[in-house]
Amino acid sequence: MKIRNIILMAGMMLLAACSDDDDKQAVEQVTGPTEVCVISCNVLADNSNQTGDLSWKKRRDALVSMVETEKPDVLCLQGQYWNQVIYLEQQLAGYASVDYNVNGNDANTGRHNTVMYRADKYTLLQQGRYWLSQKPNTMTYPWASKDEERRCTTWALLKDNSTNARFYVACTQMNDGDEPEDMAARLNSAELNVEMIQQMVIDTGGATTVILAGDMNASNDADDARRDCLAPYYGWMTDARTVGGDTKPSYNGLGTPAAGARLTPDHIFLYKAVPQSFTTLDGNYGVAYISDHNPISCKVKF
Image (tube, rainbow, N blue to C red; front, side, top):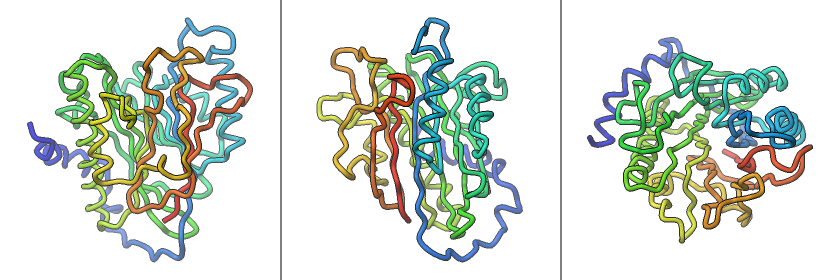
């Protein structure tokens, strides 16, 4: 099925996610340029096999320390379980969150995609989730991928309380795997992300900024066979990594990355925003590794 047809089928989901009041509200005049610092991180699910400094009980304090040190306006977090979401919400009291689980309404199973934002700086206007699948309205798997994990995108429409600027934040994690079915599912997922977000932009007047961040399970490196799945993003958006020449790996494998591993699978893509800086956060915030992925940080202006 063509992705465009899937988008039409998903339209009712987007309408359900947006209240009538939100649809009818007048857009307030933007009073000046807006700057946003966003950090994206695949948190790494809590696992009893992780011990010592690799355990969640150690890593969680380092993750909180990273946020307190870097002071992002927006956080896009992928791959965490519900207990990890609860901990971060409790520790990062200055942030509100939009959180969805890949397994529907059963928060206690499956991984989560979470958008956290500074509650003092932004107002949440709309929010939602769709699955990266042929049926984005429904809790389904990504096409014929052999990954055997459901995948979703969590999104939020935020308003900057100082400038009235509105912008979308979308947090995603695409499927893993190197089989042809996995490759096709990733490309379909990227196409779906772009077209779903394009429709959201149209629904809010066509000039809304978008920040899309997450673990795409593909790098843009010339020797990465997975890179073709990123083409839909490059066709419509700006890659924040192109600013500043930061080529450090975002995947660290907890110190033992596999030979030939694609080392930059984490990305931030922008629409109607200009990246000011891009940094891979590989410092020590209390332990050597916050996750098997280093957080990535971008400052944008629009």
